[in-house]
Amino acid sequence: MGAEAGDPSSVLSLAAAFSYGVASMAMVFMNKAVLMQYVHSMTLLTLQQIATALLIHFGQVLGLSKRKDFNLITAKKLLPVSIFYNANVGFALASLKGVNIPMYIAIKRITPLAVLVSGCVRGKGKPPAQVTLSVICTAAGVLIAALGDFSFDLYGYCMALTSVFFQTMYLILVEKSGAEDGLSSVDLMFYNSILSLPFLFFLIIATGEFPHSLAVLSAKTASLSFSVILVISLVMGIVLNFTMFWCTIVNSALTTTIVGVLKGVGSTTLGFVLLGGVEVHALNVIGLVINTFGGVWYSYAKYRQKKKATWKIQPDIESHAHK
Image (cartoon, rainbow, N blue to C red):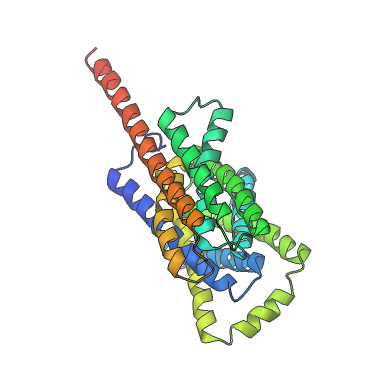
């Protein structure tokens, strides 16, 4: 999507991708740290969205940020984006309750497979052999790692796989919406948080989290360490949303997915030593190594594919210029 969005500079593209990678990696650990003490994941997501909406609103009031006025036609268009976003994050948070971080990242690394399949369904054609093989390698790594996962949690695995589906749909829609409507990262964030709230309020009541979750939260905030982790989690939620929208608009849904795969290499390594919950088994480690290798191979294959496409376009432009 880079060329379609007005051929942004490589520095801007790199900055957007790098920012998203760092924010995404930090967010996994912050959410896991909060959920280890506070299990009400949907209430946490609701708080993150309220914090986002308030920050953008007051940012505009104080003249620190710019956004377009709320428009009902645009809101209707972006409603599916918001639904898929919340479904993705909701299922991801639910999976983090029972799945350790290395396995969670390994499962989420299947997202490129889902993006490729959806591309084929939408008539984008058959992907190159290297891309297909790298995706198969990534998926095989998940299966092998799962066989050696002592802390296997079926519910957690199902939640993570469901999250992969919603993340795929969501990324495709964000790319489309940003391109067609000329919306900025801040615009998309604001619409997403406002549209999310009615949906989330319904969910926390329907799942029985509310009002018990607020009573638990009130008691937990008496602890300074928990309060600090919670505040960082809310701030990181805003940073992650911004960088994800920015990366997807400036680059593409595919680039955002590749960045997600690459940051997973660091997260997987750190996941073995931070926050616990990982019992090391040979199969688990071998599977995660294969999964990580597949992810890096996939990123390299996509980079080569994009470079090849750019070189094909270049001579065509030059030949037209000389006519």
